[in-house]
Image (cartoon, rainbow, N blue to C red):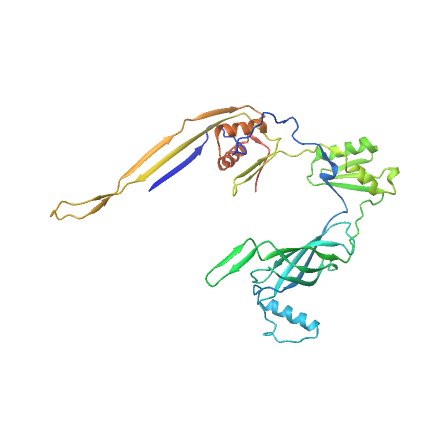
Length: 376
């Protein structure tokens, strides 16, 4: 047998970033870390929000892949009784029915009669929702009121095929969607301008971004905006837009600003993914990267005794161990290193994403990584 043990090690202070493929950075412009974006792409309007809806329903028409739990039986009996049919518990059991949980988001500004998408997932032991049709089910919000009614055929992204001796399952057949499967019955009022004011909520709260949004608005409409904190900017409606806040918002949301963000490095040890923000900086470090390969080969040899010697045939184990060490290389990086230099160093030392994650964690612990390290 032959085993190989490959280890990567670092000396002095370790450093790296997102590794893997060689990237051509010669013609790329790194002068601007964050691009110019529209205000509408970084904020939400206070008062215009989605609302979550839920419901419990029955999916019919399954080809023997439903559930036969007590919950399903009870719901079937209740449904039949609503139509004037009374049956006992045994007669209400069927593998062609499944109890499902329904979830949907009611977007702002949606009016009665419009449709929204619906998510469907099994609650019991049903194996698949393929081919099923959801019966009419009310969808309620947290206040207990019905805001939509759902019904329609379930679209499943997976399937299950079973035979006498084997079963094949692709993706998740116990969850699906009904595009446009819920009809809105009740409107949720969205008041975006109260008392001549509206508020912008930053999706990524940041004091610098909030101030830049304020400056962009005031440069066009006058002194009408002010930030209250890192995540909220209050805007007074200009006199000419006092009766038409929608027109004011249409002009405001197209203004461009350059957002700011805390320097972050996101790593995922499960997948080996590393993503670095363009404003990440590190202190002056030196990087060493090398490979140590240990090969162990087992070569068993059969030893035969001499004729009439009274001995026994035996197996003698012979082990050959070979150690190969690549040449070490040191790469020095100056302080305030940017992403451009980070990627160049990574490509030079040939570090894998797994090595990069361990190196980044070591740098963070040493205090040389100036930014947030987020382990997803």
